[in-house]
Image (cartoon, rainbow, N blue to C red):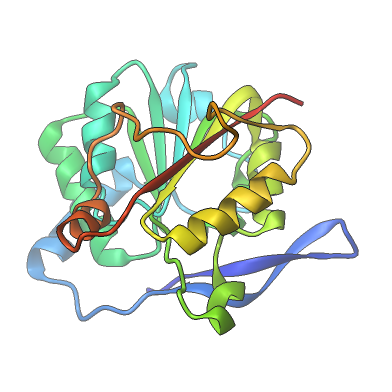
Length: 239
């Protein structure tokens, strides 16, 4: 079972298509514990990909502030956030299967009911499964920066993707992202500031301070240990 996230482009300015992979899953065989989590917990926590819009009220058995996180890794920070904010609904997307299995195990261990996860291409999930103006927050933390210039086209955060996120946010909803790559941060800032309908929530129209509402992610901690910098951006949909 392997999925890919692909860089998007517009076909005839109506439909989003994909050609350049921005994320490729590479992993060894699953461990026994990971297989156990997938076999025993997916049916009650996982959401299968479908080419029709999710009914979020039905999925979570309630109407509530809904957060979508793209690329949750091993899910530990997402699980901690769901525990911290039980009044909110959380939906996570991840293509890395061992990470999905670890997240399933963590959700079951924490006995939380406000988090569901999808194992599929995030761009396709947004296009096919998420209704227009249905989300209160979209999170994308520490996506692959693809450091080499020739690979910048593989970055998931491109203009079309940023527009797609805006379409799924409610008016007043926010897109929250962070990176430890200065070059990628500047790339994101340029794209986001160019899209009508987004308002940069920083005081100087650049970066916001690190939010204290989210736990450290695995990659953020790794970057800190290596002495990497940190850039955080938050944009609100106003139109």
